[in-house]
Length: 183
Image: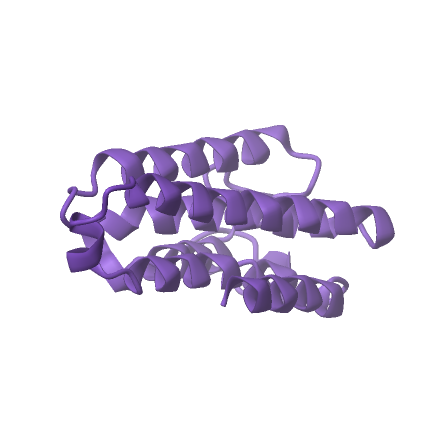
């Protein structure tokens, strides 16, 4: 499942890299311009939660090896690999693939952080984050609010740092908040 997800993610970023969408502002003063590849960045986070939901708790509880550690390594490694692959695509294509790579890290962090609480509904959190980011609007033209992070340009450092912090918090939540019987 994860190899096909990686192929779909990279092909989606490659196919939608130059397509720009304009969203109206429902609450802010200015509408939001964003790349279609920002929506493609939701694909890996959905696949990670689907993989976590396919586990067999009864077998894992009786296992001798620490399968929960392997789960954490698998999902965090896949998220980082997908981010690195999308960032490497920016050398071949436009730098907007860096935005998709950063958003992938953000969305995977949100999904992994919400999974212990929401279960299979955890991918809804990045979807809702994307929806609110698109329709809240911005402070001025091409200047979204700092907490939005999804629609920021590739060179904005606070969006990159925020995405990394959210990802690390999601992995920490996966490690600390998931009970042993559910891991």
